[in-house]
Image (cartoon, rainbow, N blue to C red; front, side):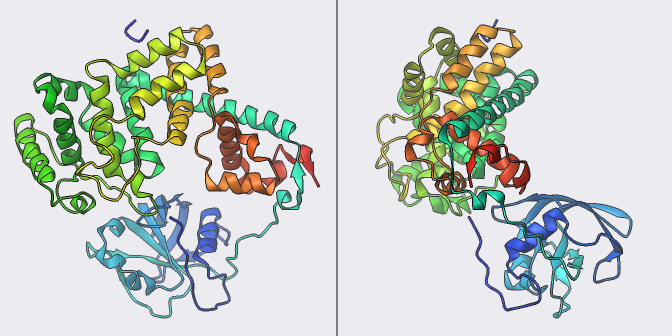
Length: 450
């Protein structure tokens, strides 16, 4: 087919709402006068783009754009209650804060000059008086419930929007990269979750499947899994500091992997990439180190076949979701050989490579949209329709905590989210309305019990 963590902050009282989360909202929506803004050093300031909220380690907002004294600065923004919190939180020792272009505060009584680990001075901006975020009570907070059938109809529409958006995004990537490499990157995306997906995809671009297969062609069959582990862990930086601490680095097996990596990296000219791996707020079973070892097993199962081609053949010849799910379970869930007591893993638990919830999410969000994208490129409406039909039969995957609270608030029964496309629809609606506080425009308003 183809070849043809949440931060909790407690501060002293002040005329402002001193919860930093409220300040994040104030900054993001720019709920203060934009006239005559200056840094504490007297430099003129204009905010072009407040940036994207960063929920991981590092500055509070990424990719912001600000004019300071008429010069455009693009970088990060860090927000604190007090200016000296920069030093209290030891950001001056952390290279992750070297790209901060503005320090936003509400209290500059310390009048300290802010410097990064690279010894660069960071401009300080005091949030103007009256910078409280607008507190508008959400309409849904007054709803006592909602009709399940009508709710399902609305969420199904948003599920279709989400599915097509993902399919179109994958379609563009196929045109740019090829179907085989795109599917490989989708596998890595699924293993990385939201926290580590970018690092996983960068890893895949550095060591594409075609290169791994060439190395495996020259490797004895009994040594292929350990070779894959050495390459993936070595390039990702888990054989050296600072990430070796997440491995059982004192074992004979680790020393063997380390020695193998030294040989392979020299022979095939393989680099150690400077990747940022996140562990905060992640269960040990989802640590990227564990996912990389799982990836070694997954690649070994597919070798020497092309995952994209095998998946596409399956979708072309099957219309039942059970066959689709069983195929994914076989390749992505069932481990071979040592796994539960793998000598490189520490405190991870679990008898499978990936949990069932994650398997369902990968099918719904990655693999089926990939098939839709390929069929769209070939103008094959029959397969496109079959893929959409399959997407509505996949059992529910993981329900995000925000969606679970949303469901409970509307008194929806547990059985309501029996299929994953409704969960995906709820996520899309939540992003489109709840996250942006567009409650007045919510399409569920007409079906709510008030």
